[in-house]
Length: 107
Image (tube, rainbow, N blue to C red; front, side):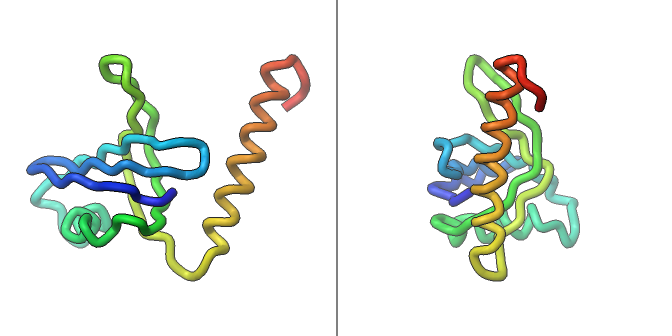
């Protein structure tokens, strides 16, 4: 999704990411001892990421009624718009699959 805002803290990085389905809070935990990590690089350049597209791998968690993605990995999308187009197609496919599963149809 597209990074709309970011906030760097001492132990983590908060991103607001919008992927066409809505705005999602993303939390990235960062250890100062990590070497050569894309997440550490992201933290260092967080203010440069606003408006850029990133791919996030993580788990959806709920804290105090607020859903947040706790990211294991965050990487900037590079190489043109193919990955962005693929993501939007993947979202549409996943949405349709869940609609069919919820109505009792085969997934």
